Length: 418
Length: 149
Image (tube, rainbow over all chains, first blue to last red; front, side, top):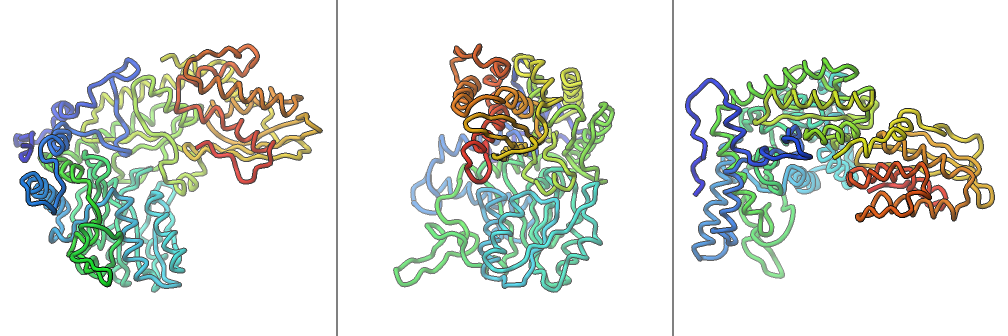
């Protein structure tokens, strides 16, 4: 059983990154004959052994569908699936488990709110507010909704440092704003958005707030009750869990009134051809057999992550980020994109002589994995008048040696491209 | 993995200083290319006189591979007929995508043969073919833009 966390963290004020690295098997491999340096955690985090084991165990032992059969395997799978929901609830500090809906990921969670809440609530002339920093998955679902309802998409601009200021947020809120959909942390730049202030301002105007927490959950504390957000969406695979599983948190009184997103099994109480009675929360929003192993794997990821003192994890990551910022700034011809104070975990940059795609290929040959491209945030790229950046992003397992390897690899780019 | 196989001198040179990097004064065909993966964009214009490409130029931004490929392509196709260009494209495409690395036609590709190394970098094949797809779109007057996806 992997109920208990495999890491028993001794009370210590020091974060032992070497020990953490041992938990991640994927870190210990060579690529192109070099030790892997993984700096792409904003795309997806690597998985600790305990998560891999938890997923493995579902298929090797508790392989059954949930909420259905009376046999023992189904019982065990159901219990573990619902335990995972409770772990998610505790992790984001939701009031109760009915507010935790499993989805395929952040994207599906946002689409759920757009199509269920949005289609049933918005009218022509209503406004949905997003920021210029959003990932495409927090733009496109609202564009679709606006086309369907006649509502208007309003964009809060960002500064050249990649910040969203309270003033510009306030200026773009109006009496017609029905929903604010914004990132908690920007994926392209690492900016932490002023969500607490935004939520207070939005609520004053009677607007709801959805936070896209995909990049936030592993880097900043998330307490949905303290934030008082109405919806919070995140993905398991950016929190050291499996891909294909995510979470929508929603306030119960809102979820309760919302129509189902998809129809199918598990989301109903009874079906006749005349009438269907929907199931209770959260099952009303979980049509079909869910990603059972994914949810249980996410539960294991939360166990793993929660076995550390979050303050120490964040302090460690911030120390590596500061070190990386200084190291990259010292590379001639390198320019950082996104320099908001208090940013976390991601460094977007350009080099004078080489296109991001070339940088990516050259440093891959040195074993260094980063992301290159527009990071599904083309409006951010457009703001800076560029098509793409190179982005190094951090996870719990990264250390200064990783940054040294990145910088050494960037010098190879300079050697080749001048 | 030898990066010099990919980033040959000719590619670095053309990437840095692309040839025919301007629109021709007169043109009767135009194509636009876009690689949604990396944001590379190319606009290409050419003058077709009968079956012969008498002038061609492009503007755009992108990685060294895409810019160099477009640059060397414009050099290679100027003065050639449409069927000749089609044959060249087919050889080029084969060179950068074939698994066996047979490359029997490398000699007939001339300078374009420097892109043979791209085959070892599957993620970069689209960079090398963006210009060519844009060219074919321009020649065949397909509407919209060539997307390497």
